[in-house]
Length: 112
Image (spheres, one colour):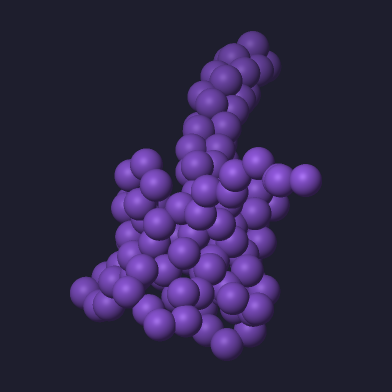
């Protein structure tokens, strides 16, 4: 019985580690600055690798869920979006609701 339990624990560990590695870093390409399209004030959202997000001047947190979902929490609201990321284009859409479109901000070399 003891052997079977150890075998099960080894199997569970071996299958769980790749799952968590995949879900933890699978969306790392969102990290960076994104400029919202089609708005007058050109709001920039910055996603940091530690799960923090800066929306304009407002700080918050983000977390990935299943089915391409991302939850963004700020002091003012918590919103779940369906995320579509393709190269330098990001679309966040509330399920059955409004859509936010972004373009990645590319920062060039610093000129001296």
